Length: 478
Image (cartoon, rainbow, N blue to C red; front, side, top):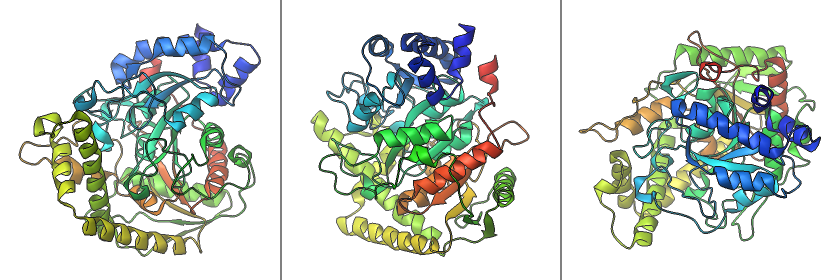
């Protein structure tokens, strides 16, 4: 078993190769992953819905030939419908909801050969950048269990960082892949809008804010997984420009001399922690050492308007989700059904008019055009991923007399990530820096719309120059 424990720390590409060469069997690897979850999960609370028997049955059967045949995998408990498994969205309201079909993305994961063994912890309806739902309790950061693992894909990030699985599903509506990637020291890429499908249940969500992909241990796993899942589903309202070649071919390819702008200015009133500034400066210096043209600059966009319009679209989108659930349950919702912040946002969202929503979308589209023009001059825009290192658990708690406290705290913490959801551009958090207390602090790179290729080339170059695969959090060494 010691050898299999070491195999668990390999990336998914390496694990699949061992299975392909018949040096290990998928069922052996799945059993090792299950054993790791049983040992570590009580301390981090990353996995909330075990699907062990389904995983064992899949691993023992005839798996499809794909890039990750036989590799264990976890689904985030939002959007990823898995027929016969509960999907709660982190909400007690949905604790008994069981989808009767797989989402298209889950189907593509299965066709890639992945073996699904569980679902991961999320904040209620994915609202907060921390994973502390009342339903399941907090997911803890493997680097310091008193700190947040980030959100909303916090369970997935914590699982990958802890060595439970080499990659796990995530989705991102305001930074929900990149925020936990930063907090947990793993690689997290949000693809271009509509790169991965949301069907068959959805065409798009919140006017395109939400994107699907994963948290991974390596850059090549992220690229190969995106190759396996990208492309439109039948009936999609729109889709991303097709890549020139498979993304896996970009890993290790020549980056050329990229023009990189860096900046740390956030919205008014948001202070950026010295550790995040140091991580930014360190990444900018590394990019310059690698031969890229690096200078300080950023798009001329109104960050206050961005936050206001984003809140309109997000609250209205949440209200539409909850109205749909209300119809499914055939009863109106009441405050006791939801966490205080969720109820307050529901109330705010229900008050938005159709005109309010469309004006907010118009404002966000104007901001997107300004960002696109900025990328005439620059290939990549570099910022901190977050304005602070991972915060203590409880930092986003709704107070009895102030249920919106968590939302305001979120805007100050995740000040940089929402712009890429608004513009639809690909963006990634890269784990290049750990602070003096041993906490990871990610660095954020935004590429041109449709140009994940440039980000994968740069990410692979950074990974080679500053490897992170050998870093293991204290909880995994105990």
